[in-house]
Amino acid sequence: MATGRSSFAKRQRDMAKKARAEAKRQKRLGRGELYDLEQAHRDEPGAEAAPQGPSLSNDEIMAKVEELHRRYDDGQMDLEAFDEQRATLMAQISVD
Image (cartoon, rainbow, N blue to C red; front, side, top):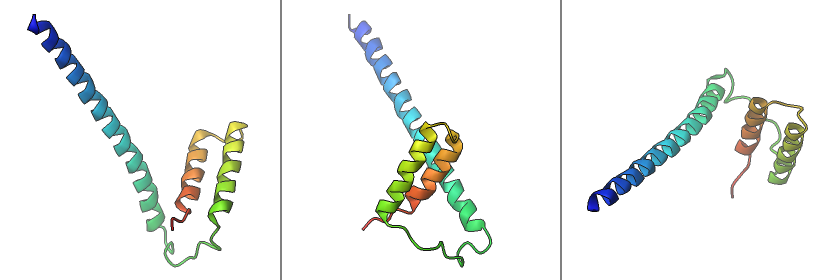
């Protein structure tokens, strides 16, 4: 009766393989969008020379993220605009 176990084990391996492939695909898609945004910013004329203005502290940035979440939850903005603005704010956080 080992054949029943081997097909179950094979099914489990196949399911695990598919789950890993899906996780890898999702990770790759997420990284691709961020990379595209960074490349678009670098390709803008004068992007390197223009200062970004006064840098905000991490607390100020997090307050803006919190306000952004409130506006999204209240339905004042769509998901695409929310994600774009949140990514911009999170990129400004400095890690010491």
